[in-house]
Image (cartoon, rainbow, N blue to C red; front, side, top):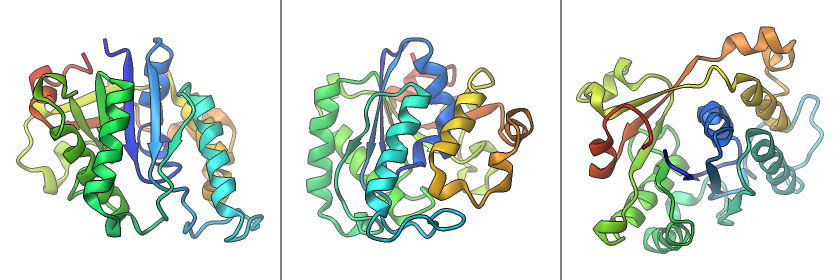
Length: 231
């Protein structure tokens, strides 16, 4: 089993909203997990309900929300790249890739997660995904870690992924970690206070989550592992 995992993401809350169950699931098994956030989400449209932060205070608040979510999920202290929210795609891609490559070399993870460079769902997501792919590819082949793209639900049911085979997809049963995922949702208070279901009793709110989270093999190392898991 992988003993170190690294997630290269764009915003605070990416980790929880998309694959928080997986993070908590593996953290319980002793896996050390590091979250890298390119931005502090300072351009987020949600500011609590009723609003309790300003545009000026948002970066610090959302940084603390990510730190708390990581604590709940069992991840290590997050790393911030300090890129302005919604401007990741306009940064020098070589420079971002170089920073990510150094992080990968320093942490030496058995698995790297990021967004798909095209189908990431947001320009910042796609930009960090492109940089992450580049960073992994620039490593010597012998030390390149398996790379996986995080998926919003089952990619085999999406037309954009119609060329995928089952062997390209990893499905993680996170039913043992849905409570942690819910509590991490609540840690991202600025973003979730408008969602009534998040704040209902745990047993009721957890029903909104899927039992499985999905990942797509992003390089040959990941494909060689097959669809059974992360090592």
